[in-house]
Image (cartoon, rainbow, N blue to C red; front, side, top):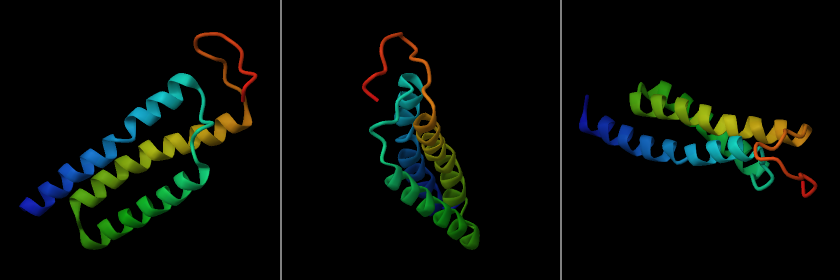
Length: 99
């Protein structure tokens, strides 16, 4: 594996793992009110395009990191859409009248 691919994997790992705190927070709080639907739609479109580009270039680092990013960011988008349609019970009890 070339040093450029290793660099790509390290960079992709850093940017991909940046989504984990958001995924965990939305899941834990059952709230996606502060998540921008437009931003995540645009971002996921970009990730899919980067993934296509990675396949076209046969770049392991682009393919692997964008697949994982697609899962993480896609799960946040899924929860945003799902939470917008139904109220999930709060994990710690309390009132959800502010949503």
